[in-house]
Image (cartoon, rainbow, N blue to C red; front, side, top):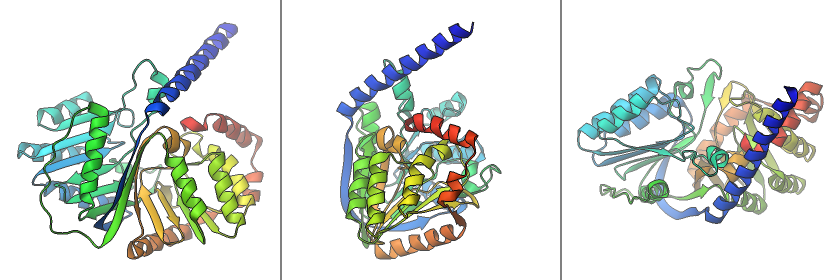
Length: 396
């Protein structure tokens, strides 16, 4: 009996390894990226869930032409139901409404809720469903983007998904910290190009969105960088190598891999201040343990690593020299670099960066700085969990 179980486990692992390898090889030949160059716009920075959803829902209710909403996770809870009611009402008014969500990230959505949306005239797309012949690989390939576009006048991008934990109503996570941008101006035209590209990637259908004219062009410039499971790692390495004074990384998951650790160590050893902010709490099994083998050499190289304590830190932010900033959907982990569909917003706006820095400084004050003794004094059990986590870190 024992040998039978061992053989079954071995065969499952062998199948998963072969499936993932050939699925990855096929995808790496097809993986593409979309860089949309800087366009003028204005941005509002939002770091709290309640004001984010209040503003988002208000913009959706005011829509006159079309709505495009895409999230990785949409819960079937009161917040998700509120979103659905708004979308159904706007569709009943004759407005084009598109709703996209990840097939695995939002797997808990009942079929009844989805059918009700469709019956109300909402165009619904479940992105990246697992499919043969590479079931294990496609199960792990996720569309992690969070984008909203309203009328071609307003666009959103950042870390918030739709669920009551994002407004602090899950006691497991407590206060939820996320960073999101609300953009207006000519840059919204770039978001329209992005959502058309993303929709076509999934359906081969060309969306014919009808943006309303806007005289507001904006005061700053914003670029978009979208990836499909490739290219994100190299983007971060290039920016790190360009840094002259400081590097700030905020991410809920820190599993960067050897190349990025090497780049960050080199930066720190060259006198560049490198600061990393990660959560103390975890929302997925083993992600904290998987970070430790990468954090240890960085601490030894003088990198400052902080853990956020008041609740769950889900923000994705990357800042260089206080002059360049990136806020988007990509975490600083292997999944975002090699598997997920992501999109980041890049900008150099001095006033916006200063506003973000104030929140970063506040968040650091709420955090505890890690030291080498903190991690070296781990128990044998914790070290064992770390080895297991490292071996499967690509999937965490």
